[in-house]
Length: 286
Image (cartoon, rainbow, N blue to C red; front, side, top):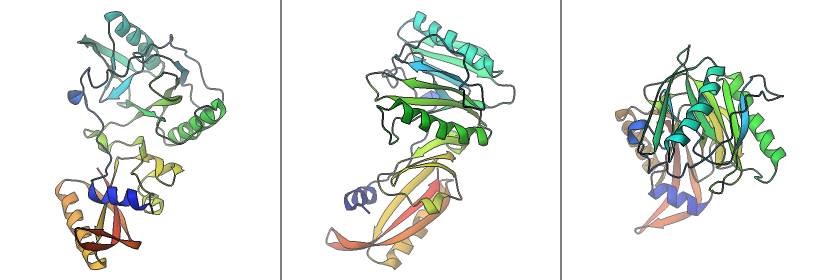
């Protein structure tokens, strides 16, 4: 276990962040998403079971972000937003999803929709995963590794785009359908856990569907939003007290405890004159 990462995770709260909702989003927050996309390419991937849309993105105003029952984007002009609507309307229609309204104000555009079975569009970007960004073959293989579990889980993939823009290393994203929840943290989504230190995969295998153990400290999974917290203690008794206190905190904040694991450090960490000999890793649903 990496001592520097351990100290950082012990002194700071390391947990997954809540997905952004519309009322917390501003044009400034997504100003980085300036992309122009080519016209939609409604083609099926040869090796896929689903007839999802594929293509390449070089600019970002056509790259849809997802929230609740809507897609949103940053667009500098009405014309750019119209391009966004014209791109995504046929993609949604391909899967029986109807556009119910659009709104554009202060360079921020929204497209609202309804699906026949009530499912909603969510997206996953692979940029923070560990892969060879210069190998198109590697990236194609990784796309397949992520899309197939979505299909198996009944979470219909509707589109995947290779993203080539100077603000990103070469990457891709995937759009798919899932059942909505009032709290988006509780939705079953394709997500990544990357908490800064090695992950206790054995503790999480029964709680979520682990899609890929990306590295020792990163995994992609299907499930609700995971949270992580580690705490240091002088001995096992102090660790037990901290575990009980944190379980109480989680219950009071309507968060679900999953599991924990305690380790004895190879060398104690001295902090404020105290020798800390043990660490506990705790996992929970946000």
